[in-house]
Image (cartoon, rainbow, N blue to C red; front, top):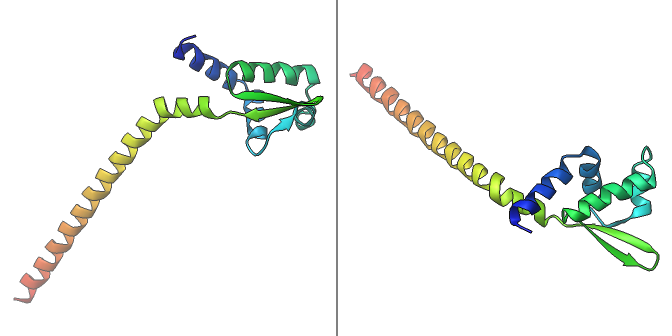
Length: 125
């Protein structure tokens, strides 16, 4: 499977609000499927498991069985790949633009301050 196919799966998985909420619930610690079901009382167990399956196929959730329980772990690496490809470069460009703006404003402020000093010394003379 190509990298593009993997990213498509991640985007499709995260396009659903419930699946994003499941990822949010798993941010702090792994939860069993039963615990996740209690986080979503409006959904039945089958629906929660269907959403978990989509998240697994996208590589966002890794299930680990311990006895009869299934612990669902969030794997943020696919999200990190999205960040590195699209968000990071744009954030870096935006930060560089803000830095240039700051330097320009400081230079303009310094120039205005020097002009004010020059005017005051000229007015005194």
